[in-house]
Amino acid sequence: MKVILNQDVLELGEEGDIKEVADGYARNFLFPKKMAVAHTKQNLALLEHRRGEIETRKETKRQDAKGLKERLEAEEIKFSVPAGENGKLFGSVSNAMVGSELEKRGYQIDKKRIEVPDHTIRSAGNFKVRIRLYEKEEAIVKVVVEGVVESHVGRKEASASHKESRARKEAAAPAAPVEAEAKAAPAEAPAPQSEA
Image (cartoon, rainbow, N blue to C red):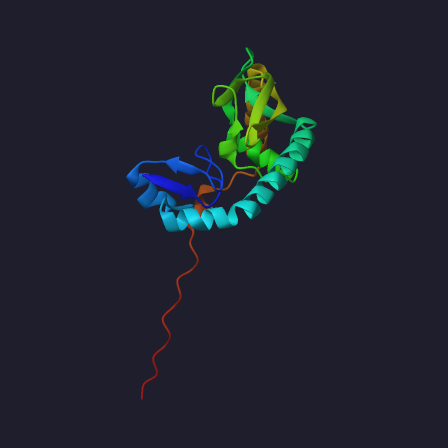
């Protein structure tokens, strides 16, 4: 089915483009969200009438993308992630994490536009993450992943010192006599009944 895009649709096209798509994709996704309209003579005439303003918007987006590219490429994003001694991460760095870090710095970028090498970063090192901006404009952002190694010795020592301090506290606490536990509060005596 041929459709005319009302707005930019990631990995499909830009506003004003005429695209061939599956019928179900058009009816169930594009049309309900008003992202596209059917390719008809009437809609084509409307498109031609709006062509000038669409081109103006596209030119603005191109200029914005160039400025954004320069700012993004000046950024360096650092992550500190727990890792083994070989540098392999316990977890990974994803496009959502990169997007979240960029958002903290004031950039609003859809995570679908962020391409992390091999979908996720699973080892420490320096990486280049590609961000698709507009048309063929892309930015390459430097991502530094530092593996934070927790030594097993340090964990064992911390665990041993915790056990020692707990043992000292228990030894210092006065021993509660067993009788004290058995004694309960005295039961209330029944109130004397008055004879009437």
